[in-house]
Image (cartoon, rainbow, N blue to C red; front, side, top):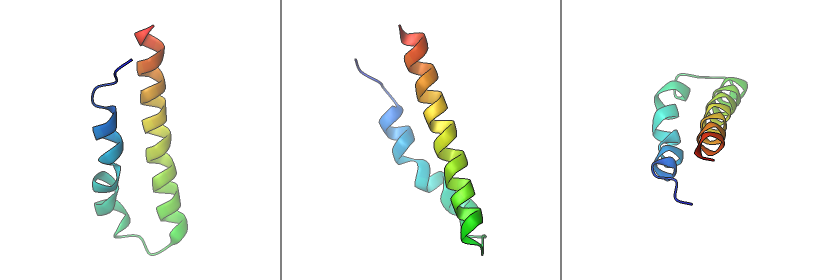
Length: 53
């Protein structure tokens, strides 16, 4: 099964997060931003897979 756009979306995460996390001074803020983005990405992929059936 091909998943067009997923690879690009995953690879875009650093570019999307970089402007946000550069302003942070606390590693907890960076971790929270990364967790939030990964959760959203996984949820979107799960949704794509679920509805592709």
